[in-house]
Length: 95
Image (cartoon, rainbow, N blue to C red; front, side):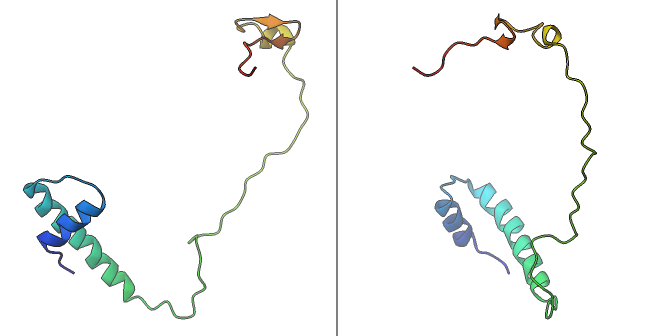
C-alpha cells in the first residue's frame, strides 16, 4: 500500500509532529514498506490457530531457596551516612 504525501502529512499532524518536505518522502517510503509487510502477513493462513500473546512457551527458572547467614550489621552499615543503633538513619520525608 503506497501512501501519498498528503496522508503522511495528515499522520504527522495527528501525531503532532512537524516534518519537513524531505522527511515526508522518507516517512512515506518507510511507512509504505511497513504497510506492505502487514499486507503480506495478512495473507498467512491462521485458521485453527489459537490466539496467543507469546510465540514460545515461557518457563520460570527458580533457584533453590536456601537459608544462609546474613551479613554482620557493622558490615552492612559501614558506608551508611548516618545510623542509629542497628538501623539506617534518614531524614523524615513526611510530616
